Length: 305
Image (tube, rainbow, N blue to C red; front, side, top):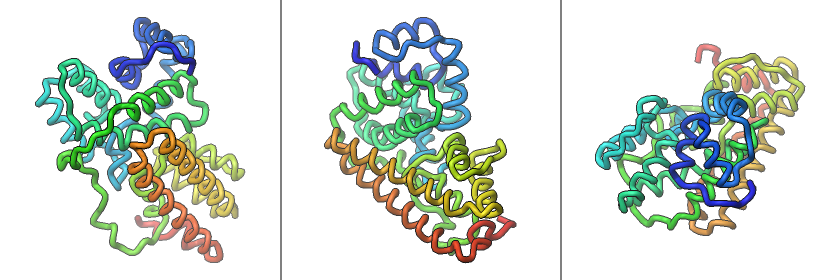
């Protein structure tokens, strides 16, 4: 992204929330975003944010990897208390959408107010979401610019020393967490939850991993695509190449966190947490590799899950 005027939080918010109209696109060009046609960006936005990278806080911070976790409700309560009620609040999948979070920070700034706890929470997961956008195969350059600009503006803001907020606390444990890890479904759930694995695997990224291993996957939900990847790998004797591809993906994310921590010293503590999750991912991959001698246990587990 060529450097021109610094994008505002409000502009970034609008670009995450919807494909740009003529006015927003003009502002993005002034901020140095890749010159693009609005018709191209409409389909690119849909492919990116509706089908592949889910720009919601709890998708990155809750161990389930699901949308609309408790922190989403906490964000909504903060919006109400601050009088932040944009029209987009009722058109997104959950109140912890990246665009709404950025808009809330812009709303507070315009009023000369701050919410250090909310800022700290947003700075934890939104830079990771931005990395997911940048690692998305075939992402439009305009949206790569958006991701990079969002990460930079957030990490350049003064860090908060506020204690963790109870209403924004991520869910890092589930009732089944202590159960013995068996079956493909549980392996897939681990890989698809950034709070567990340390990275985000979109449907397109899973498809790219499949192609690298000489496999093709059917269209479906992210969970179904991930499960199909391992099933196809088992049926075609391609489990090892798939694990190698996932290992390379983990290495790329780890390197990105390391670089981000070097460039933004205040984020080092959070980077260490995310890199610890990557280490857990690598351990899981190593365990899966050791099961190659008995692949049916790895590939299929309990079909009733």
